[in-house]
Length: 512
Image (tube, rainbow, N blue to C red; front, side, top):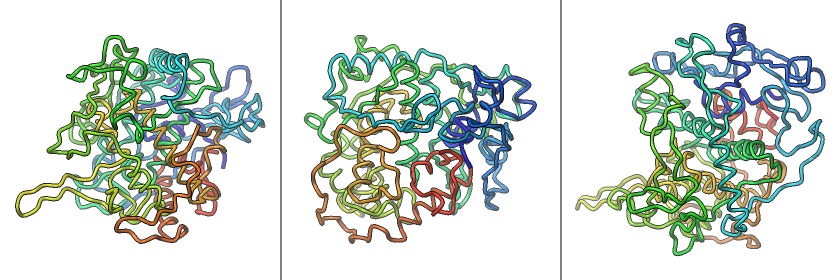
């Protein structure tokens, strides 16, 4: 099965089933017909016609779990059968075409007919780029913040939508902020594909705390990068990365006006920064669960600014987080995580032990390899929960970045996650997993350098974890967990496109 387009790529996979739609599909006629099959500019047939795409029934891959039947939040959540809750016919793209109207190319291809294999472009260390390139980075982001997207957001849930008047414009940049917001655990209704106690202690997270974390964000970055290229008319531009493990004095060496903006002691950005005037969206809102179930109000209003960027790196509450969070993660911690050849382990969430994914995401201790929750000893001594690597950086930044659902409001988020993706690529190549995961070069990009490039990564210290076989059942079950979320219809149509040989997992992706 070929592409169902960006309608599913961004709205479905990225978990924003309540709010993001191609503008052309939000006319009263399209909403009434439940069909999103636009005729692209310059064409005469929906989805471009034979050889490019055609209008087709949209499969509903949702797997209903009996455990959900009495959970009211699930019943009123528009994501429950996305996108068929709104559209049951969408564009099915052919060949290397993609997009909601089949006018784009799949990642890694270019040309008028998407026939040209793209030469991988290098994502570079932001500390090594020229002054001109740093200015370009700032202005490219700022232009995206001030350019209207082709996608719109809904101001109401499905049952309250009256028609096209309930959809509003959003900037290209804020579109991606909102996508991440709807995909994060803190905004999810309390139901999951796992074993739950009651509604208040089980959650579904599309982008975090599970097997999909690295690949969901890889797909997210690819779409952000493409959007920035299009807005700025520069198809060869790439997102830079911030190698925080080697930052000067283990502090934020990009927190200056030369990069993402300096800040004062109260966390306010310096007026000389391009980003000082930026306003955030969707911050400090009640959990999304409240909106769908307890209060049944409205989705996040993306037109309503909720504040300004805040950042005060290193000045976190050490009682809550511990002294280590006053500095950035160390190279030795990255080295430790990269030694683990096993992608993920049961139960494939934030308490997984001896898992590369959980170490990289930051819920496992980078000395033991195992999950460590908060510990209070009999004498009252308290050891904070382990927040390492990815999570460590978010908390260390102490501001907008520290609220994970809306962290992309801060452009530093993308520099951080490019580095996380770089470490994923290092792991894929180091442990020979390119026959399972698609290397970045197949997706049209590479990195200036990888972590510890030229080293074998064969150190034996894996803390309290024994060295597993690289292709043990834990790897396959980790993928299986991601596949199940795919079948639920909201996480990883897009994520699975980053795997090789999806058919071997018993799953055919909706997007290629």
